[in-house]
Length: 250
Image (cartoon, rainbow, N blue to C red; front, side, top):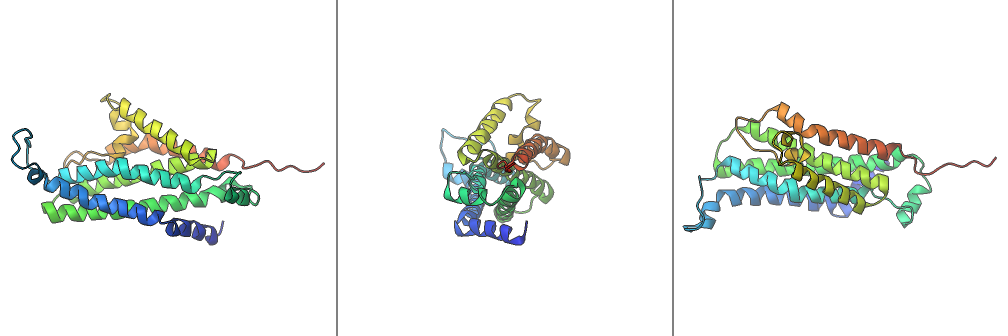
């Protein structure tokens, strides 16, 4: 692999506006989620039917951000990564690549790495916007737990996207990859009803609880472990399955 391959993939994300759309989605929720949490009492007003138990603080703002990005934006990132890595032997671009390449590593790894890097940068920008907006709206807050929770979520978003990208590369279909990932996500939501299992589920990493005193690296590792294992298995399947057989004439 040379730098040209990675440069081509970078320009594919840039010129198709995928990069711009993804960064815009993270930044938008970084602003909107915090503003919604801050001014929720004013939006509700003096309604007699809806009563707030307490005044929203920085935890509510960041919790709203991770809920929105952990579902909506993570889904967008997963679909974009799957689309970037899905190649079919019947499509013109697929015919071009499959007729010239026999190594799945050289064909798929640059696509997956560039997709992961783009999503990581977009998630980092969104988290930085959310942290700044939280300070601007709610004042000072414990930075360590906030950064830790958002870092865990960013790792989960990237891992889910790489998982979907690897599936798309393996099956040659972004639709199959998105469907399998959606089934995994829904299955985790159903299993999360069991309290003893919930800390170990990938959905816990996608939408971590924002707490000033309860966050710990051990809890983060628990929620990421299963997702990282699944992602590693998907990558292994995508990068070790031969693209096509090489036949020699006897």
